[in-house]
Amino acid sequence: MIQHDHGDHDPHAWLSPKNAMTWLNVIAGQLSAVDPDNAGAYFANAAAGRTEIDLLIGEVTATLDGVRGGSFIVFHDAYQYFEMDFNFPASGAISVSDASDPSPARITEIRDRIAQQGIDCVLAEPQFNPDLIATVLDGTNTQTGILDPLGSDLEPGSSLYPELIRNLSTTLASCM
Image 1 (cartoon, rainbow, N blue to C red):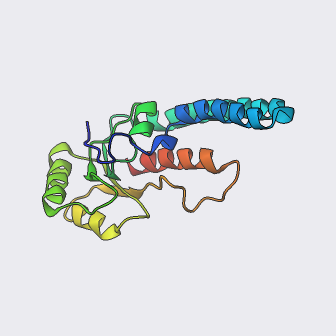
Image 2 (image 1 turned 180 degrees about the vertical axis):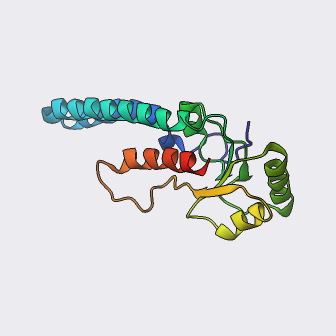
């Protein structure tokens, strides 16, 4: 298991569609308590959202099924909820925390892991220094891609969450 340096709780829980399905129920309940006149609409929207996420889970599973057995390393350990939902674990993380850059020893450790395990893909994030990925990949033929756990280039709206999760899976699949 990858060491995680976010304290007692991993704050990246939104990367689990299963969590999102649960939250829809909680949100509908809370909104209904405050606005009982519209409770039916809140619960209907939550049900529609759960159906959409259930279909998304099937789509992402199918996308990842095509590359199961491949191995990847992420920039920082933010994806364990996604990894657990889809049974597709990372082989490591360049940085054990999103609050600091990895040490030279950590970069050497990851470079060695790439060479020894034949890692297929190393995934960067748009929020972090791309030079670190270049340093890690120097001298290898390992593929690279960019995962964006924040969906920073996505338009706000009802399609943002499915696009975010879909983008994670398609980036992984295309990098393998």
